[in-house]
Image (tube, rainbow, N blue to C red; front, side, top):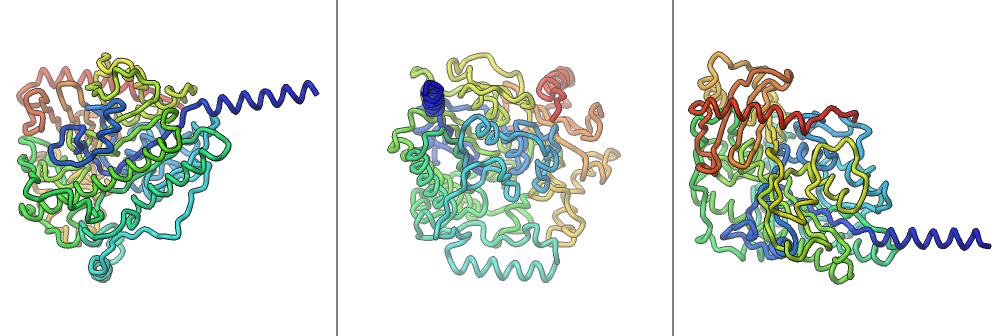
Length: 534
């Protein structure tokens, strides 16, 4: 009898401990640059994310490890950088590279958490179902890509034409339908609204059940193309107030292979396949992007309110991050997929119930990376940090946002100009499509700049741009990724104190500074890429 009572007592103690562990609400947003009110945007309407920032800590200088969906998410979710995992484009599955690695969701479930996700956490086709323990709730309503019949018709007819003309290569995104849609429909017409509703229902169910802490991943697709959002979010903006990018030229003396011709946008119907976009179209496109930001913001507000209503916000850590930035005409680019500030800098904020009251609503200028989220969450709930992680817990910044922190953070991207929109090397068949003339124009610029260094195999398949961001500089080294100590093919240096929008590459004018930064790069790169058994 005593033994039975002892077992029951241990069970009760274990249950109480499980309940005391904080829940995790893990919010991912696709293609969201820091275009939010809390980041100083004078146009974006984002009251719910602004409120979260006012209750937690906002990171002014957070960076992704690669500005494309698959590699960025694989890196964050596994805690391993692209250069370590080999996941450098959207067509590589991280489990093929690292079959035994424990993802952040797995780490929490192996420590007593239940885990479930809705929307886009990993990249499409790489959802890694073994990372999750709880089945998703289903809805009788199915989300749609376009609500308007005319847009569905355009997409269908364009797809037929592309496949008939170009064959199998058309399946790699040559016909995606219109770039945007404004339809007077409810929020749950599109996937983000529906997934928010399902997440709220799941929260209510989990609260009623056994009290186990949860890790809830909620991934929003917008503001990824296509920019579809209910009309009420479009109506929040007056196009007369929308300002377009003023820096529409590539950086002076910048790497020609570092600037792509906006492939991802150009495959949309109604978008010119070459040349500049006119102001009218550019304004509409930015309007569409902003509408999507506000649409997602509203969904985030609903889910956080659900935590409040369930009485569990005070025991829930909320982390919100964007997987990479997005050029809205800056440098002449529409899209992500560069090594520049606008593509690699991301919005990131965290709320913890026990952070010092005096620090709520503060911003930190510390350099941090998405790869830091895994060790941080582990640290915050008191779990042992897996040894394979290549990030650094920023838990100390919650107590002291001004604390001296990293000297440098890193991103990378392979030859954007010679990659398709999933960062995959351009397929030969793609050169036979309507992008042929545009590709020739891009190549001619690279050849003119690089002269005898030009080599098709190197530039298309093996040239990697490694970007280091320090407090004062962005330093990009372009070199052969196959050889660790290969000589740089080209170097870019941008002075962020005097040129924050990176208009001019000053590398050639400052050889001593380049030499110094190269040493810093090699030293700091080695620090964050320690050899590990994965």
